[in-house]
Image 1 (tube, rainbow, N blue to C red):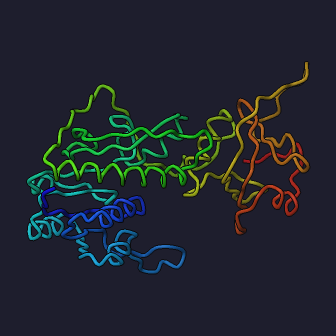
Image 2: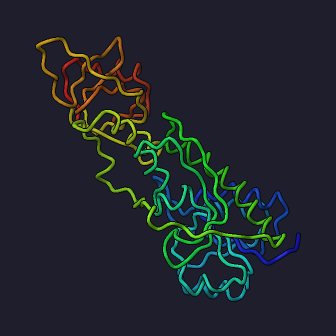
Image 3: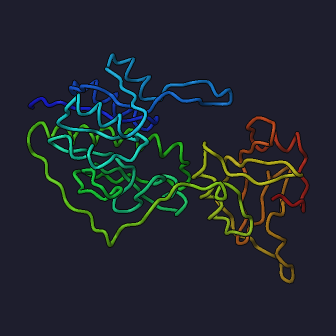
Length: 316
């Protein structure tokens, strides 16, 4: 395998397994570029990115340009032959994409051309997909539309949350990225264009999408809860306070006795001994883990003991 100058761009925790695997595999990384330290957490203390912390532990050179102009200046000095972008957090300008002689690679957590955009993991869960995956592609001026080098499918479990799937795809993507680098080292790289006609998109999540609408189908709400756990969390209201729903069980069909009408959406249909089961626009949704405003995350047993929800009570 021949050596070449490689620069790694990354910031978010999703990128850490890739950087770690490249380092342990002996990949020659000239420098790591990550976003500047920013205020984070409840205390808003200045914090480094997850990638910066990992890079420092590995003894790598770290650069933190403030903007696209500074990024270009840094890369012009480094003169990388290959640029790796994994959750860096900035759209790269064309001048940066043209700089490396071997190109710019991106690890994207979906089976492109499906779910191009900022929230592919969450959108795949919200859509109820049974599989997703990771893709290594050449970067182009169009977002997530470059030619595909490698791709691997990953099953999406019916109860997988964003957190579970995020970590799985980060690990699988790291392995795939190393395979791509190995191909570059052997001079055996090939890529295929994406079929734009098959493209779907994954725009960023909005604040409105965090709020549960009990008039929706139970399955849609179930997928919403999975897609937003552990961050930022789906929520409803309970006795005038915000109630985050962290986990729910698979939806149940409602079996009404003859002549009885369906209760309004958001009604607690069963509680106390059977947990809390909420009427949705279609079907019933059993809740498993919640967090009342001003309190800790808790299972339903603790919530029932502390708050005593009543059958027939409306939430939302």
